Length: 77
Image (cartoon, rainbow, N blue to C red; front, side):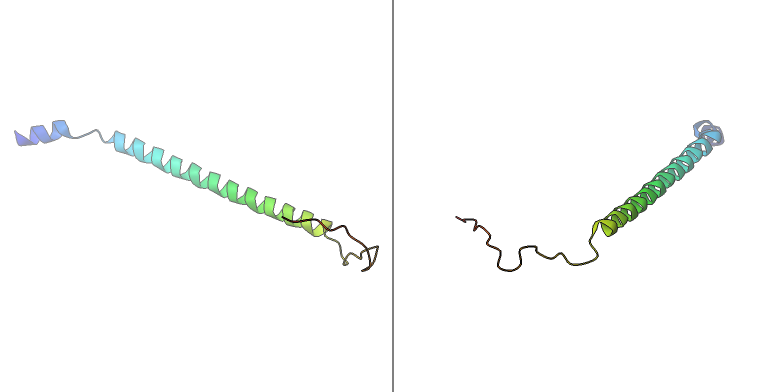
């Protein structure tokens, strides 16, 4: 008689397999999304670094007025 109670309370075999499959799919999709985000971040960083590299001048800027240029003083409190 105790064996009948154990059989009645045991869950069906297919349910844990279905839940396990769902967890595997969820983990796989999460990993794929993280990989895509990292790839996008790398592409963004490279394009930003490339844009900064192009916009920076190759030579130091020379002041057209020279060192004797009179600049207005900004009063501070």
